[in-house]
Image 1: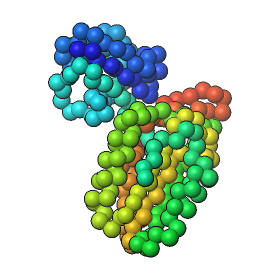
Image 2: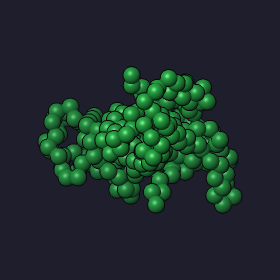
Image 3: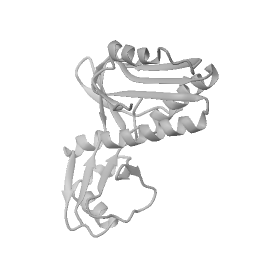
Image 4: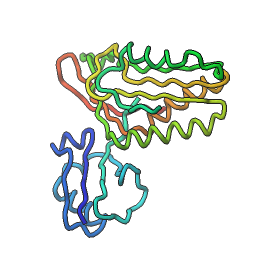
Length: 77
Length: 146
């Protein structure tokens, strides 16, 4: 599967990355592992993950073309 | 008619005015409640905030703003409309970065729904802010939801 990963807020700053495209993704767990390997610095931060604009509470089943966002605690308003 | 929630830069007086004039002639509403959020020149130690830089997950902002509006309309049955605008990019201290306007048949729902909407925005809108100080240093800021 091809998955687009987005970073926001402080995570975009520490990774120096707004988005990264991943190919050959077999599962959500696999994607998290690859992202963790590519960007070990994110382990120091609190964040939540959204899949296609929806926050997730458990590991989702991914499909080709999904968009995964790594998001620090919100600070709007 | 629906508008995009995110506005580049500060929410100007002209934009606020343009939203308020749309209320004229609505004979079903008895009350309109407005909240305007503004960047405050907070002092942190020896540093003073001169601006906030807002960044956002744009598609998700639109989705969440839609959910907030739907939730308000269903929780407050007297509310007829709700308008939400949020800045992205740099907003200087003293400029507005959030605009919420709720129109209802009666004042109680207008006031309560506006207050509830502001809290929901703070909890669930995927927006981030970086405080920029007068010495041009900057620091990420989290919401105080207390």
